[in-house]
Image 1: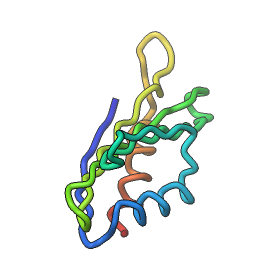
Image 2 (image 1 turned 180 degrees about the vertical axis):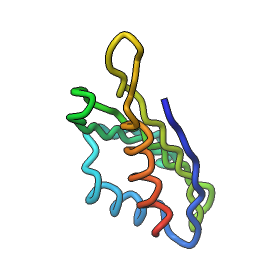
Image 3 (image 1 turned 90 degrees about the horizontal axis):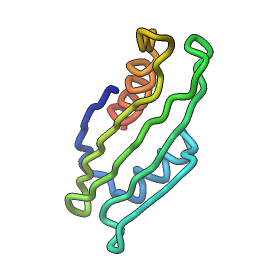
Image 4 (image 1 turned 180 degrees about the horizontal axis):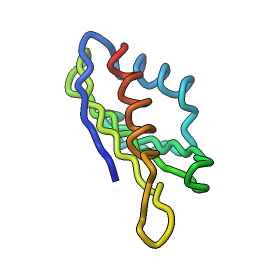
Length: 102
């Protein structure tokens, strides 16, 4: 499992999520009753490990112009040694690079 956290400023949570959804097309979405925390699940198949990876992306609205984003990638292990061949780090880097470019 790999994880990282970033805080995005000067953007609304709705704008960040809208862009995220169009880029990564999450398969599941969950939110709290106040819509201040939203959780998305993104799945991707990696040929090098012949398995799916899942990224859980949590958006936590700190205020109107500040959002904390937590990304957790898991499920990319293969074989008896549970090797991911770098696929978890690769997916995490893809998602985090996207957020850093905002």
